[in-house]
Figure 1 (cartoon, rainbow, N blue to C red):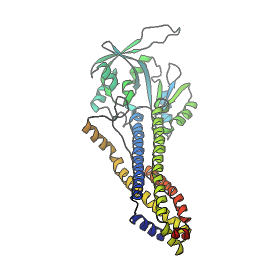
Figure 2: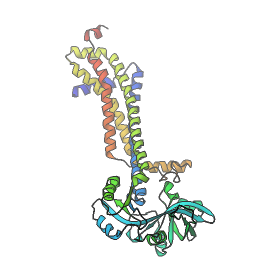
Figure 3: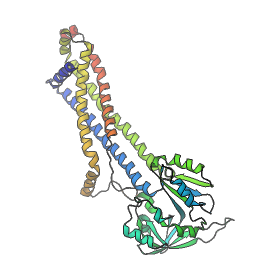
Figure 4: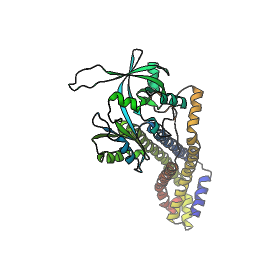
Length: 410
């Protein structure tokens, strides 16, 4: 193999009469390197979106929910809570009561879903976007509310304002009835990202349950799991064994489309850029085919000196790999340098040009996230190297078939 690398290096570094071969060789290296660089960066962006989904939305949105079938709420929810928290898969369990209605302020209306929570039972990392002062104001008044930033902006609500929350009233004969009105003082805003800021709100559990007539004190139980991606299976298992008629839900039903979109884009990006690397490898085929034609006499001399067909194949496989590996190395190094700092780079460009890549009003984040995974880098390098090897097989086979007599006579 050392002999093959020696001849491959000599063939590659030798001055070629046809400069077009040198250009094709360089373009193949650039194409492979660019494909590796872009693939590593884009996979890091997808990892970043997945991280932000887990740390931002899935910190506020419960991973799973059980809520009572009837209006009485969860029976003996305190005992059920203590029992369920013994499950090693569950991080925390907390009671809640959810109210869907209309926020009314100065003649303006906005649909909202306000959740009543037990303040003392929230995890430490919950609602990192709420300031300590806002949380203290919320704790002090049992009839206070935290509204999504989008709701407050649309209705022009300020901290300390009093809003009316209109709750539809159900009747047995399905007749229309005036909505129930709940007066709440706005203690502050919460920021989650995307459309959730235009929909959600928080109030005290005791007040929400009292207004909804929940006799047990809690309409349902919210679950935070150690592994959010196991929510569907875990909630089904818990729900089927629950001693009361309940509905069960998990985050994949309400926010799962975000995760599915991320995975879909990841697959599409990987396929597209792998094909880009494959196209760049076609240049390696072209380079080696022309190199074989140019080096026919040298191949013939090597064969007359006793070189085997296997050695000739190894020489041209090594020559093609030298082109490909140089591109892979440079592209990977560039990806390793750019991917971890992509958020800073994009932020600098945004400030410089005065544009915004992601709008916080549409997406659940307002910056471009990035998280580099070693597995993505290794997979990219392995796939690119494999494609480069495959690209060298046909030209190397043609080189091994060169007849010494015909080549020297020609």
